Amino acid sequence: MNPVSLCLSRAASRAAYCLLPLGAALCAHAQQLPEGYTSYLGRLQASAGNLLRIANGRQASFDGQDLVAESSTGVTTLLHFAAPVFGSFTIATGGPSLLFGESSSGGLWLVPLSATPPTQPLATLPLNYDAAMYRPGLAVVSAKAGGWSSPDNDLWVVDLQSGALQLLAQFPGASGPVAVSADGDIYYATASQLFPSPPGTCSVLRLRRAVVDQALQQNQVLGTAQADLMWTGLDAASDLAFDDDGDLFFVDWWNNRVGELNDVASATPWVSTWIDYGTATFGATALQFVRGNGRDSFEPFQPASGRLLVHETSYGTISQVRELRSSRPELRVSVPNPVPAGAFALQVTGGPRQGLGLAALAVDGPSTSLALTIPGFEARLLWESRLSTALGTYVVSLDAQGRATLNLANPGTQTPLPLLAQFACIDPAAGNLGSTEAVRFDLGW
Image (cartoon, rainbow, N blue to C red):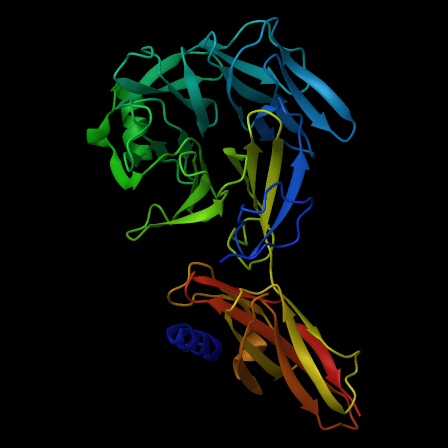
């Protein structure tokens, strides 16, 4: 095992939330954001709903009559209704159009992003609720197509070229959200027919890609017997979104929180609260994950890559979109380079509150950035290979603000000595792991 991996594993065996810089002030102090992320807040008109971030910095929203796309250059009306309708969802199709659903008349609208708005829906599906792209040209739509009194909710597949609808699955209860994983499996969260919903009655089911493809080919209607039970006992899940490494986020409106089903497809998934709105006067209503560079994962204390968008609303005066990105800790040397003889320090900020850290020093030279797997942690440790033969490693504690200082001394060198330093940090209780970028500096005289 890499020496740094071994030190971190031992440090973890020895062994909340922190608000990071925001793009705007929070509306209520009771809200708790996840540690290890940076949050940016964008205000919206109070009537804005069915949000979708689209390409080139544009954002779509629906106010009851107009589906619009906004950017820094202006607002474009994509679809207009003569009378108000209740918007259900807006999703990207992977092409030059959006799929918009409204449940007042059941219309499913294929809406071009840069062409004449459509005059009629692509298809009609009563009481449509949520949708996700299954594969190019096919979307899966959750709908109470049998009416409010129907004992089941349906999953339908809609062909985005022809508008043809095919019933794929039926599950007992009210309408639930749907999402599709990176490997093409369909995930569905059940909802109780009763209101208020009895505690712990929401389950997350999976329809495997091979099962779905066979059902579509054979015109078979699936049910709970063909689904895998991935989790049960949630109080509510009104919207779902996958991140880039298999975690499933959900809106728990009953407890006013955003939850996370970590590694939902693994043998040992677990549930955590990701955002707790507490007694805030607003909460989450919808989620969207925007993928990043495909290399870095959406985990705390990692490099910023993908981002989770959370639409927050009070259903009255507040409507806003919160964008959360991973935030890597920062390492700096306390004095200018080259470091003169005498005392100096390595200073870390943005680490896990009350966590543990490991600093490593090595003579600078050729190095490769490694992604190490550390037992007990979901995220990988980004670490410079040069530090596998470190001059020294130092275990330090981080304070209540996620800061740490390692005090060192330079005895003085007549010939500058180039060094490489990096800092890894862990929160054993929360299972979080991260590292700073490596810092290069010279010891001088």
